[in-house]
Length: 209
Picture 1 (cartoon, rainbow, N blue to C red):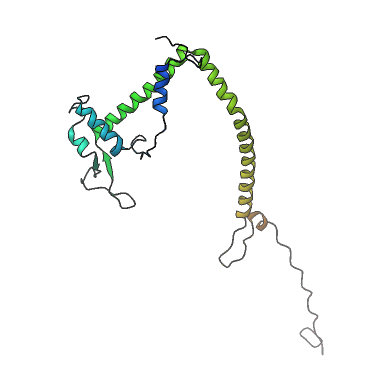
Picture 2: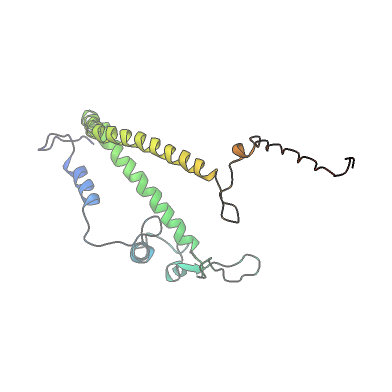
């Protein structure tokens, strides 16, 4: 397929551009995201139900019970008892067949994204390279500011860590008094002053009467 020059002169055909616009169109609905970032109950189950309706998926790949009971209780392998989380809630897992198809759809979706990018890159290499260059040049001021801010933040963090380490050197004993740091406690204590002997009184032991 050869790309035709459109009105903007960027080399992309209207069909390819329409695919990107449809994929990136804003949505007015808030989507709850769960399995692989996409909600099972509101997206995956209706999607696979439609796939089975038109015969795109058979009972081998996706049995009806996987769609009817997509979430199963997680059980202990030895006792078969229901497992609970640390918060006391029962634990569930997605039916294996449904989970496998979600993984397959995800892999195919990623493959489609890469293929779309490859088509544009192969058929409009100059325009693609120019877009990459514009992206890097537009990001340069942001990256420069963030590099400076990060360097300054690292210095502040190191200073705070050093201060915290110095403060932790002086701990408090059980009686509430500060404990002397090990290096200070190892210093030699001052020698006490010598006491002057008390003079012997006259008439005491060893004297003559």
